[in-house]
Image (cartoon, rainbow, N blue to C red; front, top):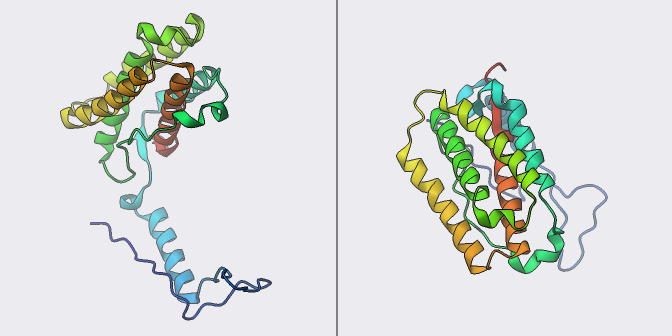
Length: 208
């Protein structure tokens, strides 16, 4: 079992950052006390040396480049400035959290995400805001990753599949409610790009 060190803020044994003067209604940031620094260094050492503390999951090395290509294609789909869609922001409650799944479950989760993203951008409604060329390139990149991951054993995860499907049901419901407006699609595109980037950035190559 992984033990998480509990860092509690305390003003005892700490001092204001040099050069900062406290005024009424505000406080200077406190420098870490020596015990806090020692605990922080200890935690960093454990993260580096103990695999149980790993922040990432293992992505097949054959997908490292293609996963980045998928992200690049998603960015190319942006055709509405995000700042113009402030009122369309929504929390879709992405179900991924670091350390929540074992490595095999994380790979299966990623596979489920690819499946649902492919289905979403393969719908007739998705062709309205974007051209067929960019969409076909994105779908080809997604399909390649799906095919490669399908070669990995033990990717059956019905519970995680339900979790991911519920997430995309919220996305589909949002699009329907917004009548598939350009801003609604931009919000969804940005959501998926950010979540895929999170998963890809946490993935560690099997060769490392």
